[in-house]
Length: 203
Length: 203
Image 1: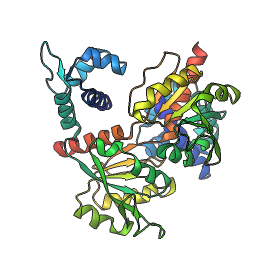
Image 2 (image 1 turned 60 degrees about the horizontal axis):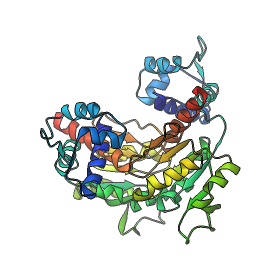
Image 3 (image 1 turned 90 degrees about the vertical axis):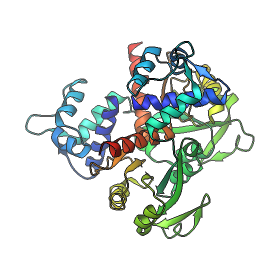
Image 4 (image 1 turned 120 degrees about the vertical axis):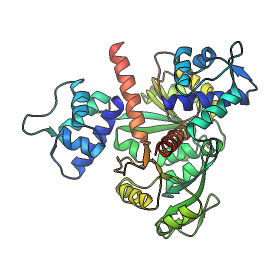
């Protein structure tokens, strides 16, 4: 459900960019392939939003959802693993637009440590705890190979990380006070395969 | 729930690589942070698996889950949008290991059309329908800018695509006979932010 809040936010920000000042749950639902009732129910869980006869003010509801998601301030983020995927993530503009700024890179390879990548310094993993403390980093993007992921995650935990966005295709074992969201691109394709195969078979 | 099947498959394949021949729902659950009952329930939905007194044979159950997901054969995949993200996805080895092979690239930029990227030819978007038919492509990865995503998706639909893995941060409007899975990396970070903020507040 929190996932849908993110979709509402994305759509509201697009509407704002397009110059639309107000919208309704019905209209939002049309844009997102959901019912207006679903949207009203999701929002009602967090409070009262919108105005009778007007609907939602797009910019205002965006701010309110950002408050709920915790992205009304910008999060400084560490990116660990400066390989192909890590570099692609760095070039991705979507993070900073939505409140996440990668401020420090970490790796262990002598070919990248102490260099600059995409304008950011690459630190050795040994400097993790110090750098995270100085830069007040609480979130990390983990883009290291699968075989190294758990070990690096352990070091992030020791360094005080509170949340890890894990791109390695493994399930991390983490203490309860550390949150994790996993992104496995092959799994996403498998979900697509399942949907296509089952529709075809049902057709 | 189908998402969890992918997690089971990933773990079973890892166990097989590690030389483990059999496992149990309890052990799988420990590895994945789930209960054994959850795993048994998920699998029971699709049939009967495993052997009394033995448990699951890792390789065999992998094959059975691949059958369910539709990935027991390799899918030829088109990748549309050969920018930074597209190139990173091409270098990502996880797709081919799990049954997805990118076989054709598409773009509209004269700087990349008719070149080779990561050993694959880049076709113009105008060649989409022909190439998809000849190469029997049913799935596409969409890694174009947000502003172009719907228009390119429409062309994929006309060309006969059945499933789209959409990396553009927009909700696509598609006919009912086309499946889509969206991956928005900023949304994943927002989910992490929400988890961290709410744990902190509850602590």
